[in-house]
Image (cartoon, rainbow, N blue to C red):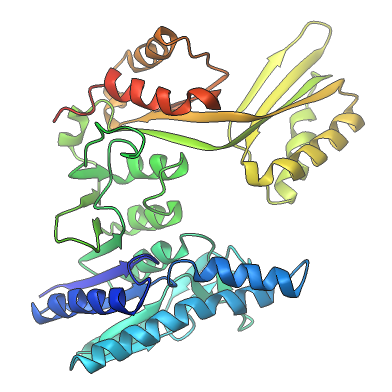
Length: 405
């Protein structure tokens, strides 16, 4: 007998028929002798509709009230799932985030989990009940309902799995695992049997949408094995686990693409201590995450500073940067949102040379110019013109023979 946490995304519980299908899968696992905790997202499309309604009610909705509103989506699915399981003859009970003792900070709309008591979950499991928990939500120290941001149900599930010391956390979605790249872009994409936490962290941060990055961070910290699989078939998916020696045989495990990138360049600012802090501190204060940063020193005591932000934050970032650049005496601010970031990832890079040169040569052979480059121990990312983005993915997938076992 095992203790399993199963998470189902919005498409998996998109209507009553799909909720019933998920209930049968949950019941099957329970009948096999397992203790089961189910974490659910809102039905697909519900969150977007609630956001739309909020903006019809107010041009600038209060963040606290947005969390109260958006949390109702998961409340609906967990109650319907519990009712369905009960109608099938199983003991089931639903819990909202605060009832599951998911305590967060007070970051409305993008709260972070601080701790999970899980005492009530454990008690219900001892009573041999199937516990159905609302994902994406929690409660801050002042008793306010909070939400965890897009993809937050993944984080809820892994955090709960860690809190109850689950044997595995199964993430059910509309894809059947993690692929070497997006199969919608490259028809040679291959499903991976397993991937390391570090590789998955890189993929999640670089545009892969299968898992939310914070959920992978939790899994790595608490050593929770994640099984990513489809809720629409019985096939085995992809295991996300600790790195082992077998993984090092793959120099590159995957190629990712992120089109949600925009570039800002501040020209001819003074080349002196503190200038970078004066540019990036106001961005950080506004909650804008800066990704890639390149500095080019000019003659005459001046420098150019180039960085990327998400397209979501692009307009606000431009306004802040232009204001700061003027204060610093910068000559101009150049902007571009027609870019994309393509990356190759693999733990095998730690022990193999030549990955960068192969990547750069493959892009050069297709006359694709590289605008920016950043690296980590297991990742190389290049910013290129957006019109070449999907071509670059296919080229790099072939260059590293990722379609081969």
